[in-house]
Length: 203
Image 1 (spheres, rainbow, N blue to C red):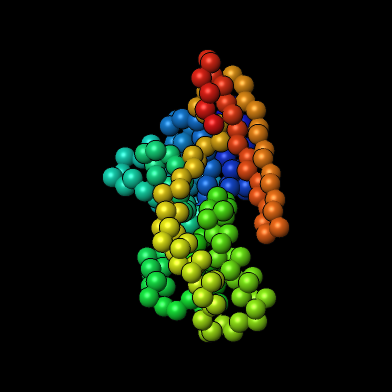
Image 2: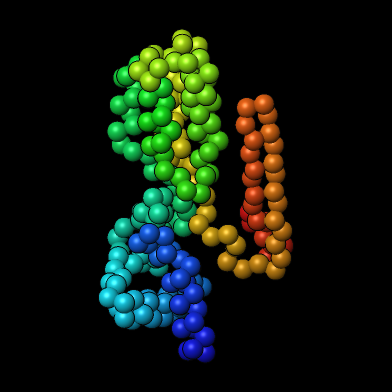
């Protein structure tokens, strides 16, 4: 059993690293402690120091952690997108192609769950390219008006959260649901797991 756990830890270390963050999941505190101790020993062999461990069983007084650029609420076990604090400065500037690019690239979302909210500035960027508008030229009034309306709601992206875990804690059965749609401007796919346990359904 110990050898199997060690092999699992090695697989987690091989497949769970993204740059310098190891991100993985375990079922309980015992597995967590085993993963931590084995990982520290294995990485020490290569002169790598593992530190700053965070879990939703953490005794620290920190409700929010950063994981791969996303905010992780360890209490609710949900992920959300963190917007840069200086994003509001664009509200006082004329809307140019450069501003659009800055706003689009300011939102770091490796999972892509905020993609629908960022669609409008991307479409406006396409319009600016088609209109051969320069980087520092102010957008046409119609495009600027669309951007300003979107700008009033962009902070709502921080309130958009998704569960960290795919599966419910217990389940008897699950089904994968995938929806796709397209228009002349964009296409989208949405996938979610529907889990059943003792007649209760979670998504």
